[in-house]
Amino acid sequence: MFTAPGGSLMSPRVSTSYADTWKIPELAEPRYSQSLERGLAILECFTPEKPVHGIADIATELGMSRPSTHRYMSTLVALGYLEQGARRKYRLALRVTELGMSALSGTDLREHAHADMRELSRRAGFPVSLAVLDGAEVVYRDVVKRLRRGPQGGEGEPAIGAELPAQCVAIGKVLLAHIPERERKPVLAEAKLERRAPNSIASRAALTRELAHVREEAFAVEDEELTVGRIAIAAPVRDHTGEVIAAIDMSASPEAISVAELVDALGPHLVASADHISARLGYRRENATGD
Image 1 (cartoon, helix red, strand yellow):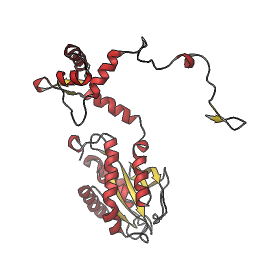
Image 2: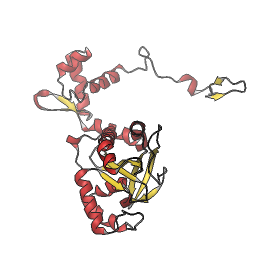
Image 3: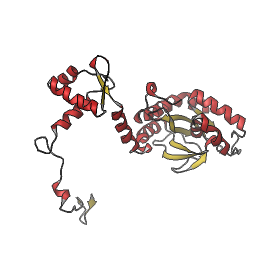
Image 4: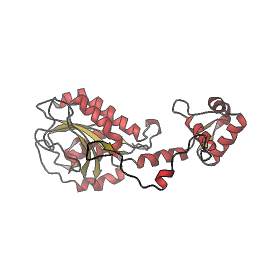
């Protein structure tokens, strides 16, 4: 849409060709495929609450005859979208999961996370960030600043695209801690253990101990390790395999809230938000293959 000289909203001009003749077919049109509709309707019957169905179940739910239902479901089995288990019951097959993962991969990580980050920041009154690991540094993909008046965030709040040494920030410690063990040593060797603030981790031994603790707790704390006046907490974001692919954090100033209060009062909410983002990415704890 754009504003015309007189101030009214007008639609942009579209060339009169294919755009003017093509439209989604309606139910009564010849181009509409009722067979495809029925096949997709069968797939939609399988839900987390009821993942297994028999022919009779589907036929009753969709108002189809059993022979027709059997024919459609046999086709879906042959194409890899359904699989038949014990007692002639059916469940979704991996082909459906692959389609779901393709849809997820086509959506930016920020799109999956932003709504939860925004709500968390609104309720807590502190900035919330999303970052991924690049070598021994974190790269910030999204930052939601304070959305209401309240306590101040910490010093050195990062911008989208900022790169920071991972061992100095809670969000980075989460990501370093969950690197697969075989890959962790060379990444940690890249880390420049400089003392940037009073509590910066400055030795390999201390970093190793800290990351072991983060793996155990699945949670990280930052206490003026990047800069004076900044504290933070962070939790991991996992994909459908259970692999940690990102993390979110909440930063604050020690004048506004103590580290202990940040952890105790807001830590559970941060973890819940990270878990919800992970669920959007297909993570299910019982199906995960990661750590």
